[in-house]
Image 1 (cartoon, one colour):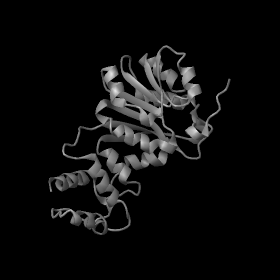
Image 2: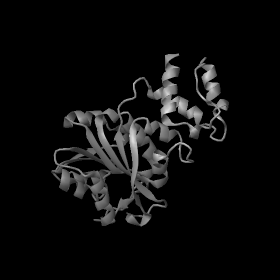
Image 3: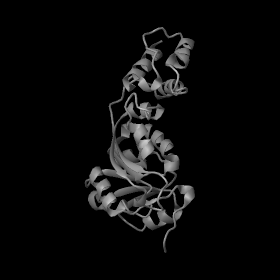
Image 4: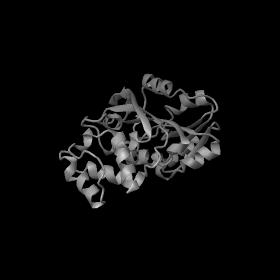
Length: 254
């Protein structure tokens, strides 16, 4: 019986074999690795992934699809909302860091990325299909219009690379946007950079993108009695990630 895509789950099933092959080649899974696929759907990527990795953990919210997947002994099926999955626990069970992959539901892709950010120390790498606009924001350089809060928060902990563009016709049903595959490789922890404080600072900085930082972040710093050196005569998108991290460390010392 054919499974119809469910709009409430944001389901767009990947059907183009050449695209699937290119994605799996980019991931390059190997036997013995702890590979976790988010949203396996009808198994388009699951099949070639498990051919190379031999075992695979899949996270599937759709009850009917999860039931199908459970019939395959080479799969460990986690039937759950991915935002409720304990990725550090999965890594502990596997005895190694995770390689996380998936065609993420576009309607909740950003919350998934931030959920995984909390587990970054337990991840070897991540390869995701996302809306191209989101990938452009994730990989943007300072001075680019796509550079924003998402950029800073993710580039703080990951080296990010867009590896493949994917057209709508590669999916059933076709989404109304272009897609892209992103590679995310964790960076060493930046000691002394608390995520909550960085998130607050960056949110304030990008709250009024067109204005100079003295109108937004400058006031935020003044309220905290910060008198250190930081050029607020710039716009938020002109400040490199390293400068934001250094500022957070300086504010925390205050």
